[in-house]
Image (cartoon, rainbow over all chains, first blue to last red; front, side, top):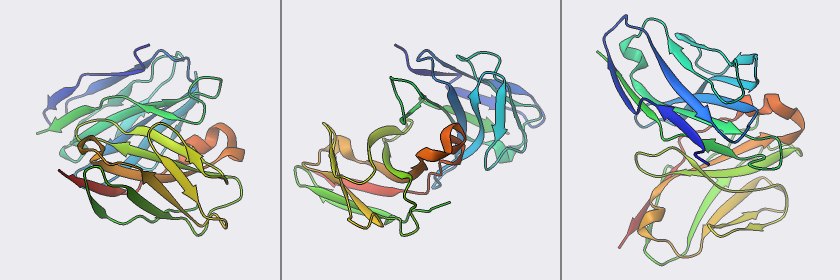
Length: 115
Length: 115
């Protein structure tokens, strides 16, 4: 199993550009989420989803959109990038079944720089 | 939501035991205590979790106070690879899927291991 896969690992954008951070998991987990981590700070929840077709906002949702059309994929969209969105982004999933129940599995992260 | 308090940093020598404390004085009866750690330049990884009784696994032990207002993560023999940020978080198992959206990672404890 690959676990949680994030792409790209690194990205540089100019202010105002748009892009999508991809997240895929192959564990059939129902819950997926996106966090951002800024230097010296803990992880802050951006958006999360408890299943296909269901999404909700976390602590810092402004400037980001998400959708969940399949169980496997949970992309994070930046419609108009701003320098304040320079951060490391982590995708995570958690299972409510036999495997991975009650445990968050994180991806390796996507480092985004907005100039 | 119940919060956790951890020391900002701790230091240890290699092959010595490490006790990482966490205070959660407002914990509810349905909150699980989870520990994650984040190695440099990686996503967080699950370490251990428990509810009331002490727990052991191949990575660590979790000691939970009788009143559940505090807990301690124990690394029995620290290695250089254990140098990481350790997060103590709470999850309400009664809240079902929506509780996953309320997982809050604070700044954690930075553990430094000296050779």
